[in-house]
Picture 1 (cartoon, rainbow, N blue to C red):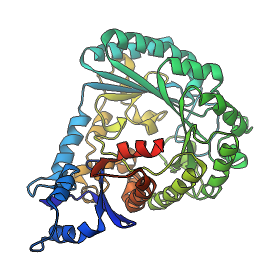
Picture 2 (tube, rainbow, N blue to C red):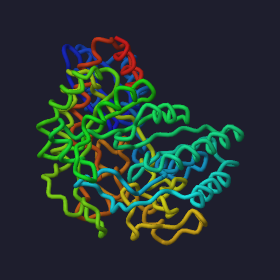
Picture 3 (spheres, rainbow, N blue to C red):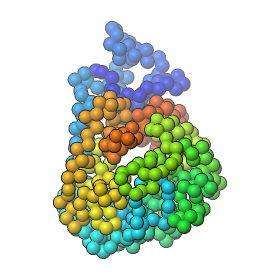
Picture 4 (cartoon, rainbow, N blue to C red):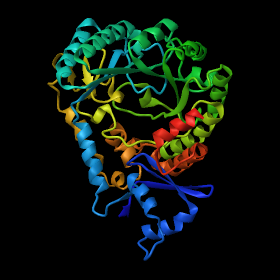
Length: 450
């Protein structure tokens, strides 16, 4: 037996803990057992180690057989999930227009509402997929998707009807700026099986209103907060605070306001990394002048932010679970549909004519740009292959990974903060008690119930 290359070790109190990124499992090891285990792992003669402990480590994949190639197994998983045809996913841009004017937006937006012909094309694609899939998932996207709410609701009704008749599972999420999220809309989304809503607030009012103003320059903060009060009664809400070095120091002020509004425990808050990207179109991101974090700087901010959201009741520490092919861009049976029916592979490509791969009217007849995405392979990258975060990242963001300038921003923050994140999770979960190997998802739920 040998130690997994994806173990992360931390110490807390009188115990050692090991988390394994390949299994998502966590194991507590009493200090009295650790010396013998360490000798065993170092191949020293006559280690004094309990067989039950070794069995637990094997169960949690912290120990694997000497001839087991973890890297090859992950590559196989990546390929299987990349070409999985039992699931189908669409990201649908109901409107590329937006009522906001955010200076870091990666899209070259223009007024557009999805028409009936494009909706018909989308339904034809689903009809083609239904006989061979078990699950259909939709992400409503923009621009601002609620500007195109009529199309969103009509397509949702048609999706639900078709999937129910075909006994195919259906679920949806939406990314919205939150300004149009009135109570009627929340009820409509809930009734159409939207399970999760992401809304951005980039700081306290003066900061947010500078970074996410209306197109006419007016502020948006308090309208969004007003909408959140009823949204949380209908939908699972997460707030994303997009940060760079300029607004991140104001993060606690945002949490303080949301807490004073009585929203603690009703929604979660997390950080998003602002990245200035020039993809050759006219998006604001290409000329963004903010002081963007490097990936390692953002990982440090994320660790600090976890302590804040715990203190204010908007979340807590977590450790990631293993994934397969990580996103729409590299999964063969997923597409991004623009408001005019144009097709892309990556959310970041929306609105960029240089990244169009086809059209809904003939969705299987794609151009050569599709292969650029499907050839992306983190297992040809030595840095990825030697990274402890590979099982939970699987190469991360292909869009950044294929960009020489943005290459480092492809990585999940776990690459940089894995020790701190595991330690924070252990500290928060220790009171829940652990016997043997525990799946971190189960332990997180146990902590939430306390």
